[in-house]
Amino acid sequence: MGRQRASRPDTRPTHSFPEPSGPSCTVTAPRAPGCANSGEVAIAGPALPPRPVSLPHGSHLCLTNARPRPLPTLPRSAPPLAGSTNNRVGLEALGGPAANAHAVGGPPAGIGGEATAFCPHSGRGAGGPRGAPAVKMASAADGDVGEALEQMRGLWPGVEDLSLNKLASSLGASEQALRLIISIFLGYPLALFYRHYLFYKDCYLIHLFHALTGLSIAYFNFGHQFYHSLLCVVLQFLILRLMGRTVTAVLTTLCFQMAYLLAGYYYTATADYDIKWTMPHCVLTLKLIGLSIDYYDGGKDRDSLSSEQQKYAIRGVPSLLEVAGFSYFYGAFLVGPQFSMNHYMKLVQGQLTDTPGKVPNSTIPALKRLSLGLVYLVGYTLLSPHITDDYLLSEDYDHRPFWFRCMYMLVWGKFVLYKYVTCWLVTEGVCILSGLGFNGFEENGKAKWDACANMKVWLFETTPRFNGTIASFNTNTNAWVARYIFKRLKFLGNKELSQGLSLLFLALWHGLHSGYLICFQMEFLIVIVEKQAASLIRESPTLSSLASITVLQPVYYLVQQTIHWLFMGYSMTAFCLFTWDKWLKVYRSIYFLGHTFFLSLLFVLPYVRKAMVPRKEKLKKRE
Image: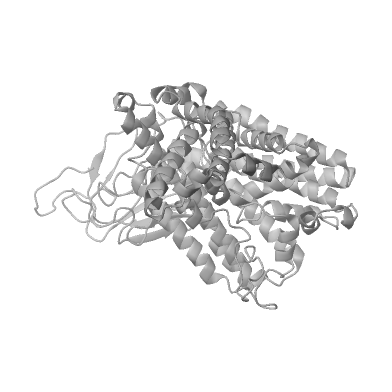
C-alpha cells in the first residue's frame, strides 16, 4: 500500500510501462485510499518490496498478456514474469483496505467500486457495481479445486480472496455450507425455467433437463466426486434390466446401495459433521432402494398388493434417462425430500397441476414455504454463534450448576434442528413451484401442495409429545421407512421388533458413528415409555380425572414440553457429537439423566398400572 503523503504538486517522474505487444486488460484506476494523488496505486510482487507507482490523472493501468497461452505453474518463490499478467503480481488493495485484493473501486465499495473494466481475453472482470465482486472465477468443490484456480493461486497470491471460501468466511460459514445453500436456492430459478419453457414439452427433454441440472449441482458441490452418484444410478438401471422384477433384484439393490453408502461413510468419516458427497448419496440410496421395490411390486397381481403398494407399483420399464431424471431432480437431490418414481412421472407428463392444460398455480404456496424457511434461516444464523455444540464439551459447561446444564441442553436440542427445518422448507418450496408438490384436492376443492412436505411446522413447534415431533419432522423419510422397511417386516409378527429393526436401519443409513445408534436407541425407548404412560393415564380413572382439570392444563403443557425438549436434546447430543468420547463426556456431566429416567419408568410403569387401573378396564381391553 502506498505511504500517506501530504498534498502537493506532483513533480515526480511518471513510470511508464512497455508498449503492449498483444491482447491487454485495461483497468481504470481511481484514487486509492492512502495514496496522495489520483491514479496512484500500489503494486507488489513476491521478489520486490511493495512500492508506490505514480500515474498521471486519468491514466490507466495496463497489464498485458503478450500472447494467450496456458497459465504456467510456478512455485511460491518464483520471480515475476515481466510484461505479463501471468505472473505472481498481487494487486494489493486497489480500492482501499476493505476491498477485495482484485477489486477496483473507491472507499465506499467493500468489493468492487465505481470504475469498471473487462478483459475479454482472460475472462476476468475488474470492478463493477458497488458491493459486486470485481473478478468472477469458477472454482471446484472443496477438496477438488480446479487446475485453473490452483494455477492462479501460484501466479497471483490473493486470488483465493475472490473464491467462495472468502465469501463464506466473511459470513461465518464454511465453503461447503455456502455451496449447499446456493444450490438449494438455485432450485427456484430452475423451477421457473421449467414452468415457463418445459412443463408440457417432450418427456425426454424434461428428463434430460433434470439429469443435467442435478449433475451440475453435484459437480458444483463435490467436484469430480459426483461420479459416485452417477455410478450407482447406472448400476441400478442395469440391475433392474438384467435381474427384472425379482426378489434377487431387490436384495441386490438393498445390499449394494447400502454397502456403497456405508463404505463412503467409512472412507470419508471425520470426528465432525462435514458436507461431503455422502450427504446427497444417502438421499439417493433410499430413492434407488424404493425404486427397486416398486419395480418388483409392478410385476405382481394387483389383488395381492395393498392399496398403498398399488399406488407406488411401477408397471412399465423405466429407461436410463428416466431413472437419471428421477435421481437428479434439482429440487430434491441434495437434501430430499423422498418421492416415488410414479409421482415423478406424473410431473413429467404434466399431470401435477391444479389447472389441467396449464402450469400449476403454485407460486404463492411456494413463496409461503420459502418465506417460512427464510425466517428459520435468519433465526438460526443469528443464534448459532451463541448456541453451539462445542459449548457442551467445554470446561465452562462442566462447571455450571446441574439445572443450567439441563436447560442449556433443552434449548440447544430445539435450536439444533432448525438448520434441517430451513433446508427442508426451502426445498419444499422448489418442489411446489415445479408442481411436484401437488397432492390433489381437499374436500372443498382447494388444491393441496404437501406431497413433498418434510416438515409440519405448527405441529413441530407446539406438540408436547415425542411422537408428535417424530410425526412432524423429516416426514417423507419417516414415511419411506414405514412403507419399505417397517410394513415389509410384518412377517415377523412383532410390531416392536419391526420398529426396532426399522430404527436400526435408520441409524446405519445416517452413518457409522456410535452417536447415531445411541440416538435411535433412545428414540425407541422413549416412544415405548410414552405409549405406556399415555395408556396408563387414559385407563386410570384417577389419573384421567386429574388430567382433565381445565385450570391445570397450562401447567401440564409446560411440564410436558420441558420433559419433551430436555430429552430430545439429550438424544440429539449423541446424534450431533457422533463419537463415543464426546457424547459420553456430556452424558456423564448430567449423570446419564435420559437413560436413568426412561429405563426407570420402563420398569416402574407396569407396577403402577397394576395398582391404578381397575381389573374391569384390563378385561375390557383384552376383549
